[in-house]
Image (cartoon, rainbow, N blue to C red; front, side):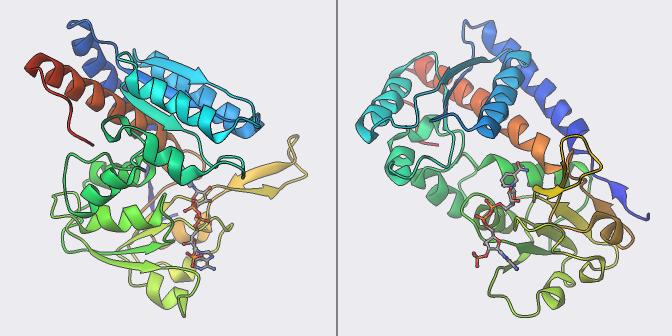
Length: 305
Ligand code: NDP
């Protein structure tokens, strides 16, 4: 294997310890950063994920408040929960775990979150400000984590051709906006590929940095990777594996062994992008607490995002 491993677990641990230090500084002013997490229904995988977030918060000195309404909660009651968190002075970040059950209007719920507490970065105010290059807008945790991974390898993105596969609102689209910013960790030339792209391999082979967020196991094969590329695999897919007791294993969207023969850096799955997502969420929450604290001292309401 030629590629070096981009170790998301190690880098995420570094970020969590930076967050813990900032939380300690804040605690001297009597502020404990708080994250409110709303998880509707009883999907076991979502509960595991939310427990991981809660534990990570507590380890970093943040306060986490989980609210777990039943799957049949009505829209008005869910909006009331968001209103309550918006008004709660101990809560600085709000996350509503998506997707919501089909009878609920996700857009209305997302837009109800106070943009200054929108640490998931999905509110249109934050998305719009990010698209306009505002460095203070909260950025969605997964693409922000990808940028941080790239930054911490020391790989220079300025002028580099970044190819992103996937254009979802959660990953691919904000990823493209982040890499386009006039910002030392970005300044890239960006191409976005998706399901309608003709000859995907011809596009991905142009990527000096290749970011893949599709959700299809190993769709990017080794011969689709440019020699020396930095490869970031956002995908997490379960594939059957009867040799394991649990009956499945996790693989990314990139055929790891093949791609590692050509790449210079590559993220593993698991242990690459995944741990970064939670770390960036904690970082946004502590940033929000710092801003709200500063605004309270200055006697003003916090600006959005
Ligand atoms: P979506 O399903 O929302 O988007 C997938 C994107 O891939 C779409 O833009 C789609 O194109 C594109 N696509 C689908 N098939 C192809 C194809 N054959 N060739 C090229 N492009 C294709 O997924 P998400 O963005 O939400 O997630 C992507 C992956 O990342 C998933 O595996 C998910 O589990 C993982 N993920 C991991 C996170 C982490 O923390 N590690 C966080 C979030 C997601 P089109 O728009 O044309 O339909």
